[in-house]
Image (cartoon, rainbow, N blue to C red):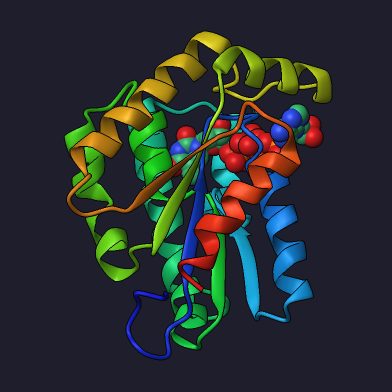
Length: 211
Ligand code: ADP
Ligand code: TYD
């Protein structure tokens, strides 16, 4: 059941630590939606728009910035992602398209709260959460050591947060933020420590409730 107002598309987000399998699961979900001829689009944060491009340069070490500046950049990138006149997702959702996002504001709460107070992050993201609150946030939960092995196997260059100790902290912060926001946000937790098809089956069972 789509809990949105009549005519609006669903908004589904994927969250998880780096290497948890979000992109893989979004690809598998997209296949199922195509087979069923459901109109949808996929998108990700950080974006490749101007603010997102600055963030990418910071994540890959080409630019340096204070953790508080990084937190504010993610807030700005997210608002542009929602409100941009050309391809903003608010338009898409209002037009009835199902939007699937790889990361949204819970990523700020989990990643940036290692350095910046979570209260500030939640307040700073209030514009986004009040403009577009997802039908469900799907958290792919993976053991940080396993996620790190997957990243090591598949990437030549590591990004800013891709260290196992950091991933452990981020996972804990995800759980802390879920607990803090349990009255307002719907979070579905999926065990991502299994084969990708098993994980995809659980994801599909959740998604069907919100289409
Ligand atoms: P994320 O987008 O969350 O960083 P990816 O989907 O890119 O994660 O997955 C990271 C790596 O792990 C990729 O190489 C992917 O092929 C692999 N992977 C994804 N899901 C699984 C899984 N369930 N089991 C084993 N390897 C996986
Ligand atoms: P992403 O490209 O999704 O990385 P991955 O596919 O490896 O999961 O995200 C890039 C990085 O940006 C990732 O380390 C998480 C981080 N990030 C934040 O720190 N805060 C945020 O608000 C978002 C959206 C991402």
